[in-house]
Length: 381
Image (cartoon, rainbow, N blue to C red; front, top):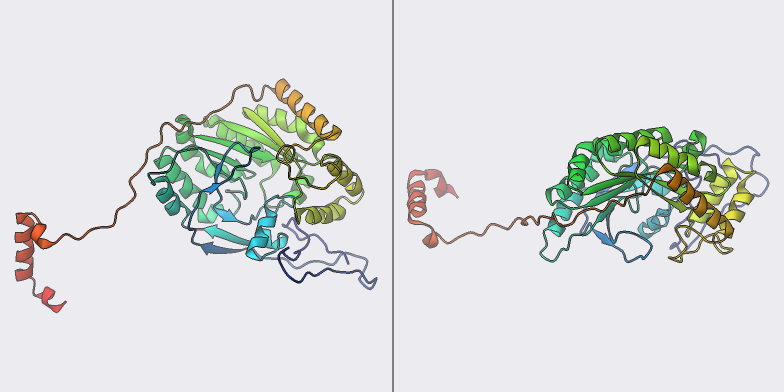
């Protein structure tokens, strides 16, 4: 049985979470019609939640930051390859369609962040926004949680690095420009392909590649250090665009560039393979063979040394192409370092303490005495 693609969604199925005791699998018994069955549309639902903490910490040696904030769980962009999909299984939800349709928003994120930054033990270090799910996914336009987080970071003079696939990042252009002027902000726009058809099926609700390039231009003109991430590089599918993306980003004002190859942890491997067979059946076997070449014969390898860039002949070829194109485009010539020395620790609001009347100043005691005498209403309480 073949399921047709759902308009506006990356996943074709809603596979059972890996922690479920019972697993379900569809079997083709030859009675199903030959044409793909149209799948019903799924609306996006957003559950508001109260976060107990907001700054996440990691010790991964292959990541440039060790602090991050994720305002949302799940991501409406619906990128079929997203390495964050397996996290939805911890909510007893599917990493498939559930990940892009059943979202959670941390509505008190800014309040919790202010409390954590005000702690006397907090040491200011770069905070990354967009490490797991996109901080500017479509629901941000309505909820503005990321915008509130940026306002708090600006208040504390705290450095932030943003990674996004959305042109909506420009809605916070003013605050980002002010922070960048102090050396406190930079933005990376992620682009995997300039081919509209590929982008539309890979990342159905992310901004179009052209809109992302325009966002790079607007950010750069505003004086915000901006870079491009070519990601994910998928062999035999979008790797032809590496040089085109880098030169187009340079022309738009990007200063820095990075890249990551396709990562297929846990359930993502099945979801991507299903997507590939549906949209590019003639290339599917070749693409997966090259993926395994870059992963030591496996579909995924979590080794910190190779998980971002892969290994082997094909991975080396991608690495050489990227470095050469960056050199030709004049990218990565100067490293942008954000400042932590401007950090200002605001005082957390203190609970009001009621002072005994006998300790009040004389004029306050006299005023209180007059109020008691002149206000008969007080006798009612």
